[in-house]
Amino acid sequence: MYTRLNRARPYALALFRIVVGLLFACHGAASLFGILGGAMGGGSIPAGTWPGWYAAVIQLVGGILVMLGLGTRIAALISSGSMAYAYFKVHQPGALFPLQNGGEPSAIYCWVFLLIVFTGPGALALDRLFTSRSTARNAEDRTPEAASPVAV
Image (cartoon, rainbow, N blue to C red):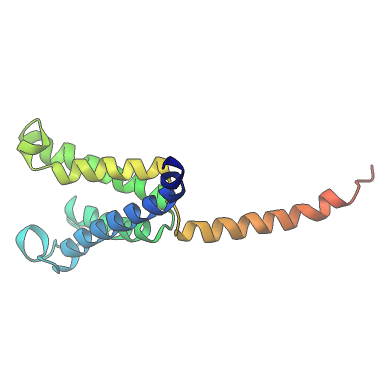
């Protein structure tokens, strides 16, 4: 049973990454463009306002990158930091626990993205396309050096 689960792990991670990235990107799109219910019950956040507009840009771009698996670990780290900032600056001053201060989404996203930083993108990530190409290119570049003796 464990071998089947272990074989499915990269695909489960990919599905997890895709769903989390999509949800995070939707949150950013709602705040930036006023779609899907908009920011705080309607409308959009005015461009350039600190910290809401910048957080929404990180949510949209970071969510899309994580969903696609492109620059996953860096995008997840920045997204995690953004959510930590949101929790400690916006929610935590209101009350100690996330349930009391409305910061559950920020806290959960922070930890979820931190998990993605350490687990990686899983299968079906665009990172893997670029990594496999660069690995193959590096192997081709090294082959002639390894095959020919070096004259000193």
